[in-house]
Amino acid sequence: MTSLIQALAESSVAELVAAWAPALRWPLTSAYLLILLLVCIYGLHRYWLVWLYYRTRGRFPRARRRLADLPVVTVQLPMYNEDLVAERIIEAACNIDYPPDKLEIQVLDDSTDQSAHIARQCARRMRDRGHDVSYIHRIDRVGFKAGALDAGLKVAKGDLIAIFDADFVPRPSILKRTVHHFADPVIGMVQVCWDHLNRCTSMLTRAQAIFLDGHFVIEQTARNRSGRWMNFNGTAGVWRKQAIEAAGGWQHDTLTEDMDLSYRAQLAGWKFIFLQRTRCPAELPPEINSFKTQQHRWTKGTVQSARKLLWPILTSDAPRRVKIEAFFHLTSPMVYLYVVLMTLLFFPAFFINMTVVERGSMAGVLFGVSLFTLACASAGTFYTVSQRERKRSTAAAILQIPVLMSIGIGISLNNARAAIEGLIGHDSPFVRTPKFNATDADRSWRRGRRSVLPPMKFTMPLLEIFMGVYLVICIALAVTTAHENRSVVSVPFLILFAAGYWYVGLSSLSGIWRRPAPRAPAVEPAPIPAPESIKS
Image 1: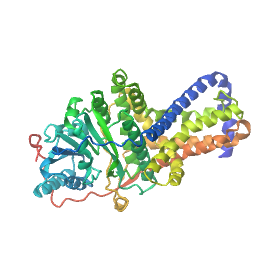
Image 2: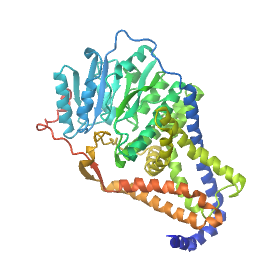
Image 3: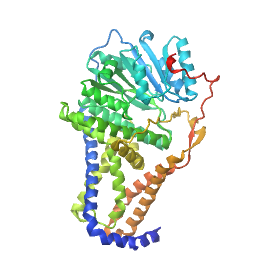
Image 4: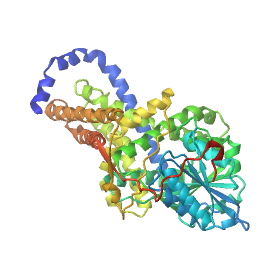
């Protein structure tokens, strides 16, 4: 490999780059510094959220009063081909500790496979046990999840609407912990914190758990307790039906209908509450392709929401602090694009000095330390604090930071593509995150049926592997040219980048992923009901 890199450095390519270096230096340097500046700004914002969290950590939300007469609650369970978890979520919803005459369960099922039969049969069993469960099946699936929620809302009995995705398992006490906050008439939504059923299954699920802990423990808490706006996370939350309707209802022109509705409701004057100590466990995607599917949808949907709502927010009469935080929140997915662009500039950086300070000088050292502190250490601080607040080992969290950063870098290509699609208005369907009924105690999902990736899905893993190869070349260049430009200091970061792209690309391109075989129904599935008879 070393001889190959030396040959590359001495080749006509290097000579061509050297010849063009004077002309390319300032354009590339300007682009590089601009990208670094943007990454550092968002890194500084992470520090701000940590500071804001500590400043407001004692402001626990409390209900204004306890409701003597509990309101009617409709629990909506949107699902699509969820054969492995349909029964679990329906039974968990029916086990919620709430007066039976004031609890309605809606199974909003758009399934096109045997899942429809499984969910329908389970709903029938729960009705036979005395639960108010309705099964609503749509044929066309217009609007995807947003369309299903809207269809259920039109016939919902409750003044409050609780929503749980199929991979969640709400605890029996969840409604009694949330409904009393609606004694305040301006409260439009109460969100609870996510917990994780399969946190310790693998390195990937551990990393996801820490990513989500950072969002819920630090971001959501800091925003909500400081009076800034937060978002409903699509599940494990309770809405006031009036707030949904006043905000314009569920709309499906973005892939994050939850974020879209959240900002529209807060623009309309409704207040939200986040309950960090009330938790609802859920399954984390246990394999990389499911994780990437989820991340693509979240990233693209956030950018779509930014295009749709950022200008109305910035021109509203909301406080300045709200507008600034909304800007950072809605534009944060663009960091993935900046990471990819920064990666592509690594190679020319070995031939063109893309800094405004002399390497090795005191100014250069200070410049490098500042970049590390803002761009890298901010993420480590953010996630370490979240683990400490979750009463987990601080030392273990610090040791996992390189893995977190590497995986975050590895999915940057996937998410950069999603951000670009959101920016240019590229339409795509709502792709559900596959559910596996995976828990730390039961890992039998690994022994299930193997499914081959569709051919169109191979492009992104190949590009990720290419990025890994590209970075290996950069590492070799850094080592072989260290005596000339002291670039060896960049090697640890290049290794982190390369490892991330290799891990994500190779894991995706393994060609197979393990998916549990669907449980066969006890009898032949009943025919899907006709459109005019969607409720049973």
